[in-house]
Structures are given as C-alpha cells and as structure tokens.
Image (cartoon, rainbow, N blue to C red; front, side, top):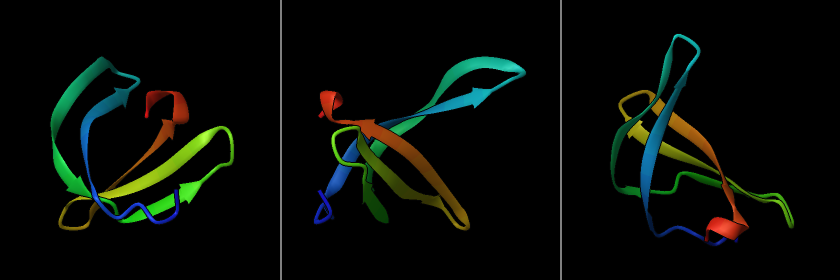
Length: 63
C-alpha cells in the first residue's frame, strides 16, 4: 500500500456541522501521501488546490 502513487478517482465529501454532507466534486487526483494502517485501511492526503490538501481514510473494504 505504501507504493501507491497512481491517480485515484475520488468523491470529496464535505462534513460541516452546519450543513449536511455534500459532494464537493470528483476527478482524477494524484496521491500526495499514503499512510497504511494495517488491517484497518489507509490514510491518503491529496493536493486539491494551491495550499489546500484533503486527507481522507480509505477502508480496505472499499478498495
């Protein structure tokens, strides 16, 4: 899992306490950082825009 440097097709979900979750967008984005968590899944950091990075957790069940 640590060698994943290919593009990932993701849907970015906004979790704001003041509004329901909404799909922000989707597309091919490169991995910036991939941190494996053993059997639980993988944490991925994706560069979204200038100075903006998105961190999300990807369960192995979703792969």
